[in-house]
Picture 1: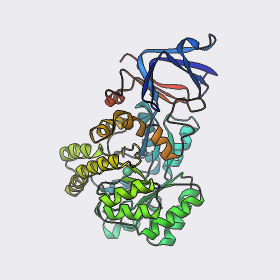
Picture 2: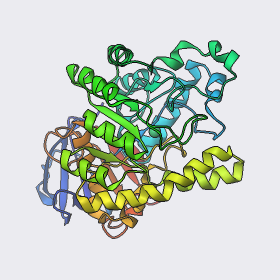
Picture 3: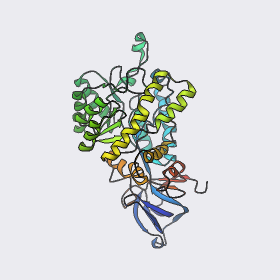
Picture 4: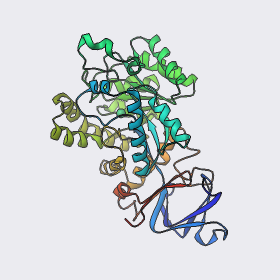
Length: 415
Ligand SMILES: [Zn+2]
């Protein structure tokens, strides 16, 4: 357990609300929560202090599009999922969650696992303190049309019946299927619903530009989720699928790669969030070519990577709400901060990029009252870097100190 009261005294505190780099401050904590930010010389004498004389402290980071369960994508299709048991999937989650937390990501919105509800178990194990990891919101399973981007594709037709049902909990064909499956996923312990609204890059079937759910199906999912207080995140690359999802009332568009100008305007007007994994395409291209991934996957990656970055810039310009999400699991867990530099390269200020991964991410998740800020009452989730991240956001790729809920989970100040 953490001592009841403790304090952290860094070189600087970065206030992401104002963009100010504040010297001579200390973070006072009571157990897992922040009790206040005070002048460094005002720390009560009976409170133990941890000094970080060379580091800048800011709120712990948030990845709003993570996949903590499973092995990294091999680029050889989804049939590989049949080579691992649910127990093995869970153990990969233990490793991935630890690597994510150590990289400074103290919260994550997990947007899907093929093996249903393994993410629920991982979230609960972390919450119970059995294993280290970020605070998680989880999607339970993918809601996908049969044969679509969230289904297990690539099997011989006569092998279809060998797929374990846990891998197809969210597969739907009708509007009624959608309502039934959404209820089942939420009753199974999920916090949000993830729809696969268009084709996917990594799947064997389909193309990212093609819609895979109707507007009516999407609206049914949104209505049913809302009854349970849950939001809906829609995987959508293609312009038509994105517009269906926005009209259907989803909370966020994931990827957004081929969004047209009408879609950008709709996003801005409705306040729908964009979560765009604008780093991953480079990783897929590099590793995919080296390791001989399927040509189809590399083609689809080509068709979406640069286009997505242009969409991202347009959305920044149009004032669309943007939260940080990287599709971790496509690339190795722990490299989640690499995308910050891409946000800056494609139109955000360093401050806006850091806010997208802290305060704005918290807002997307509905957790604005507990994470994303260093303020009295918020969780003591903090990271520290050597230098000023407003000059260079890539400093976050090398965090020296990580604290989650008042407990130190990484401590290499002078590495
Ligand atoms: Zn994803």
